[in-house]
Image 1 (cartoon, each protein chain N blue to C red):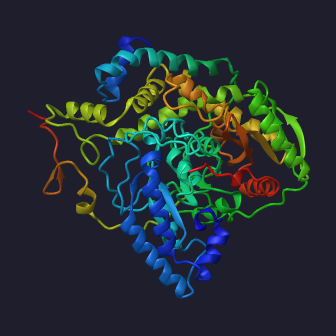
Image 2: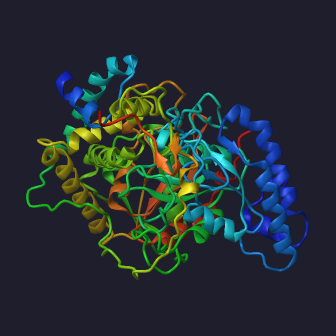
Image 3: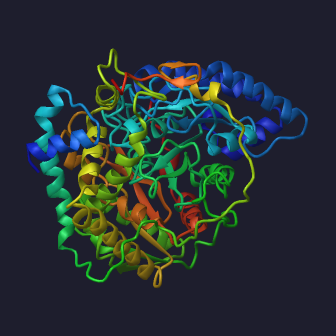
Length: 476
Length: 93
């Protein structure tokens, strides 16, 4: 069963001629056709292009020019610009948008020979934690389809969990890779801010947005990270750093921040404590630590992300690209109605909030205040990493909730309570499947210092050698 | 946060609200202001604002032409163009 194999096995199968890239692609497309009507994890399926790319990959493999990902199926979150497929960002505003170029991440994976099967569903402009703000309707959780897969990269997590693709790209601004990974029982990595190029990633909050990877195991995610990461001259905030290499897990000291663990739901706590004991059994030392400004992360995040969003989304004006209102009476009417019709309710709330916190009289009290809090949150991590090698924490306060049950926008924001601190600090963080509560998967969050993804990969891989949570699959 | 502030924000953001959204907008924004006010209790006296998570300098690149004009390609997705120009309603009477 090729679709249950890990990337190393798929690589071997392709290189040994056990199956072709075309066969792998056809197999995946068949499963997408059968399952997507239920899960809605793809907005666009690029079958024809995928088969052509698979044939090119087969030619490369035959010629002995295959790279690590040549012929491996993949899917891109629908905010990575693709020159050969629409890029909707889950929005009516961009429902018809064809980018004139590829994002750097897309271009690198194309060059590597990975075969993209399509574009995955997401909350509109990556704003949301349940996939319900998507103009194309929510993606669903393959473990229980009436439940959310999480968000914003819900389609990507759902597609990997359902075995439709072994790898998927995603982005994480305040938890949008880690939370859906936890909800769907897959592995999701948000690298250090600057590790992966943002060029061609539709911007939400530029000082927080970071591209990353979903896979069924830490090892698979490592393959994808290595193909995505690295400096890009097109993105001046992308860092010039050596490639990620896996560290050694044994002997690491891990910190459990009491602000994350105190008050955790009992079932969730039990699950995560068992996972922590596995890390100890693997040779790590565990100690309690404090990240004192954690409670201020959600409000500070909401101010900063909304402020940046209100500036970034000013470009959607109904003039140059995107949705345009019919029969505008004036230029102002064109702007106001094009944006009013093109954006959904959550995006509008963020734009209005961002406009508010940046306006005269509120700028110091909100925007600058949030930036000062951000420094304190980052300093919390810097101080903690003076004493521990990595932080171990929950990803989410609960397992995946039922679609339609979290209606209050503020309650939805609070879903990000354990993920926004690492986003504000810019440090890398990963969610690994660590058990089930009420029949739904949950994740353990590992957080490392800036550019120490190697520690996350080492810890995650050590954990997955001792456990089999990542091998569990939802029933058909 | 009141109706007057909300009207100013929708004007600044050039954002028309649907009637259904306008009914909820004020209550939603009040709840969001309550949420973001939770950070006001944090003592930030003497703490410099952090605009960017990494201590990095803006790199400079060589002053070289790297892109060629591709107006037709870029305008292919525009709602309304003529002779290479974007068309909008008349601005000056």
